[in-house]
Image 1 (cartoon, one colour):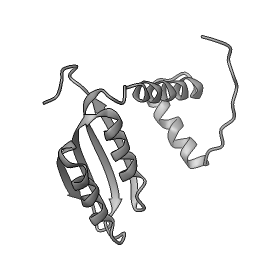
Image 2 (image 1 turned 60 degrees about the vertical axis):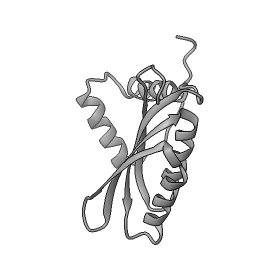
Image 3 (image 1 turned 120 degrees about the vertical axis):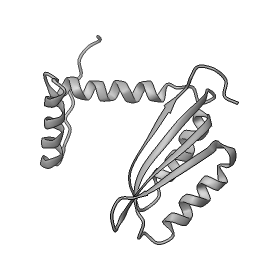
Image 4 (image 1 turned 30 degrees about the vertical axis):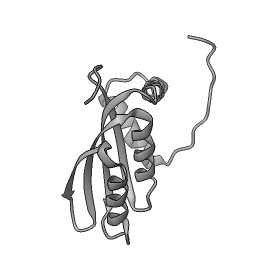
Length: 138
């Protein structure tokens, strides 16, 4: 490891408490090691070559009462053409829906699509998971 740099991070107390609970349950010795692992994970994900053929899932939770959001989600998926293989929609409660979008194509294109969806007003949370078999996709 190179020279150590110390940084400061400001967090809401409730968020920090929840983070501490998670890292304790995962047996981290300290917050620094947990944060280093989070950063390493993001760097590995970011290093997947944009031209690599991959499969991915985008899981989102959104407020289905947000005006025009459902239509925007459908339009974006239709606009992605054959990159979107399927989508599963689940009603979580009166206000929230979960959607899992299964995609394949070039990693960069799927990241762009996911970022566009995640940035829509009313999308509360989401995560893109990219994977590959190492073989060319059909």
